[in-house]
Length: 284
Image (tube, rainbow, N blue to C red):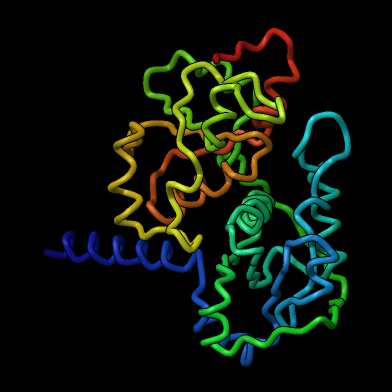
């Protein structure tokens, strides 16, 4: 009986933890009034932030976290990332809420970066203006600057996989490799000609599969019901990639944080890195 009770308590704890990875507009609106230490980050471009943003939000554009160079979407060095967050007033122990244009792509991307760096208390807010207006979340065009602090990184290496390791796993029957891009990119038929196809063995799973028509994340039950269509199960190692890591972050968040699959990684180098190496095979 004690063992059963322990299992139930443990399960309740896991489910509660999973429920805390995102925050509703209603709960956010209430906490915005009461928790002055909460750090709200608008990850959109500076000009979008300047037009209108949540009152009390600072601006850290997701694009400010990438290197310049021929391979798109590659993160800055870890020390540089930590310095950016610290300078903006974000510490690794801050309660952080991220939002974007409502697509969940860019806040999920920055969520992944923060969690990989060791931030302990990070949440996603879906920018649904109907829900935000109902929750009376105030908007403004007045920018905000927070006092600089220190972000002390503690890397969560299990969240990421590098290109060399991925190559060594491609023939592993327990691997599920997901391509979260658009179908034309997967097939190497995109109009921008950025893609010649997909990585060997990759299964096409567009990132919108885990989102509702309004752009919110689907529920845990919905994602669990969807998973077998793509061969995803708890005993499989799941690796997600896209063109530059943005769309794949959405699938990672859904599978790992909402559905609770234990073995999920993001290939942050993404297709852009893979295709930059001439000898890497690409399937069309």
